[in-house]
Image 1 (cartoon, rainbow, N blue to C red):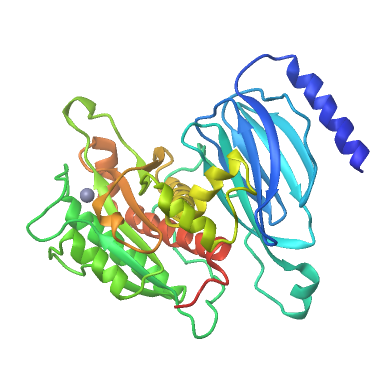
Image 2 (image 1 turned 45 degrees about the horizontal axis):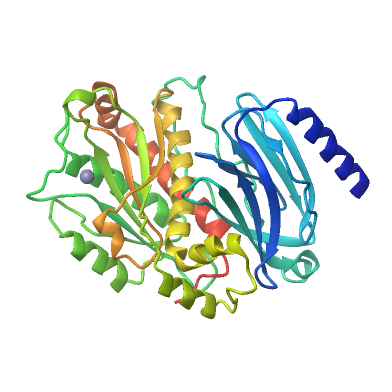
Length: 400
Ligand SMILES: [Zn+2]
């Protein structure tokens, strides 16, 4: 087995070194941070973006959009990795990783700001034999992302039934705060057919309806045409001990960019300071001595846990919204998951995202937002994205 892996590795090394193209995967490490946490760290010369796709709990891949990846250093097979394989598929390169199947994992991912390090953090949960004794609802293992849907046509009068999801554990009901942007004296962006404050309120109510069906406690920062301030909203979120905070907005295309359209999901990013990193190192029981240069990034990741979680939540919601939205309008554009310092996200203690559903003053997007069916599908998309995030990343953490 090991021989086969090594030889297939060398085969790929030879095959890929024939193409001296970017980006280059320079090295690959697995570092055990603690008994339960391992970091799979890919070092590139530079990448701008990636996708992390779970095929099953112990089998996943990362996809880098550019063609051709070369590996300059041999793979050091250690700890939980059973197998690794690199493939070119269409216009991206995928690195498939098979983990030790005796564990279940909870994953989180981060790309360092300089595009050099991609870290897949795998938290070992349970040995599968233990699972047999104490059954747990199966994790959803469907591939998360499908960017290009071209064949779906308009299907307006379809009956919509929210998918049945596993109920949250007894006694622990997750609280989700939905924040329809603006309201009252603040109309938000004024579009061709609608004002932002009204469109987002409708989507928020619809989203709340689906989330309640899944068994969550849902609280809206406003239920009508009122104007809570931004700090009112985050204070409310903290007061009700929200587990997730979702702010819903509609975008506005400025004068010379009227063609701008599509969905954007934001998470908050801030710079991490050294003292906080040191504190995190202490709290996590790791010394800076033990871990090398690469783990400095991991430390900042541990410190900024909220950002990391928000980013994953943003990705889950983004993918789910695109998928649902495209059932109605196949041309619903995905502009990506982005980071920005939104004030409303700064003070919330839980993972928080801000959704820019579509451009309310772009002709095509405005037409979409006008459709109640489309808004309903956006709501389903948000709810399912949240559900997926909770199933994959929040299990066993549900307590106040
Ligand atoms: Zn807004």
